[in-house]
Length: 254
Image (tube, rainbow, N blue to C red; front, side):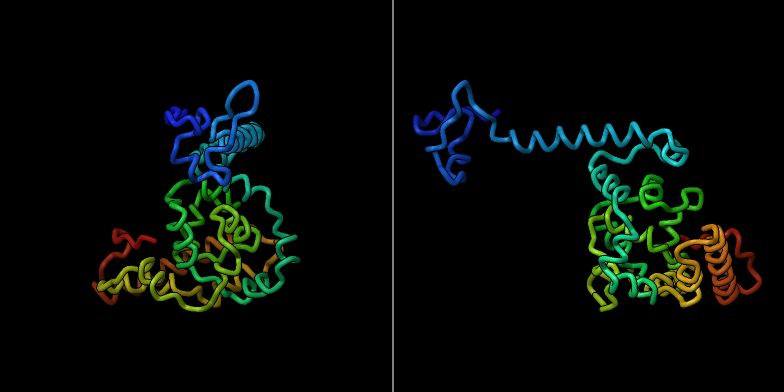
């Protein structure tokens, strides 16, 4: 707790600088019976957040995917709870333009990466679980690589997790500065192709997801298509760069 400033006009527990910032200045007096710390409100929010997380984790920690992924970092727990609480069906009703844009393939893979970079979310199985994505194939990575188009439900949860408006994720206007940061300059043909896949989802990739909304097929169908597509492109590139070479030992990271 901050120490009293020594100024007789400054209430105990509030520094002189804090008193100047306060709308009532040094005239703000503590209630009878003691002082209230300046951080009481924020401390209450933190405590409430802790209670909500403990309740959430007690309910979900035994689920198979959370057992495998483990708990998320503390700073992202509120986002995880938001992703779990959001209602994708209601989001489609409330934001029909966003749903229509998703259906038309407006999402860009690099915008997902930009949202992760902005929030500091890095690699972690918990990201897949929070978004309702397939943990065993690290599906969120495939989204960013342009190999799998997220389902509407998954995109809504990703937006909640990263606190990113759907309109921003589905904005088809180019943002050269952000895109250049997310897709670094590449000289190697494989890296160049990788960047091309991350600029825009191919129509067949979009169709594979949108055509089965709101369900009716297991996710693995989309994952299998994406893996086959990426493997084929990898073989094509390797054949151009090193004719006759075995493509399997050559890593094409996403």
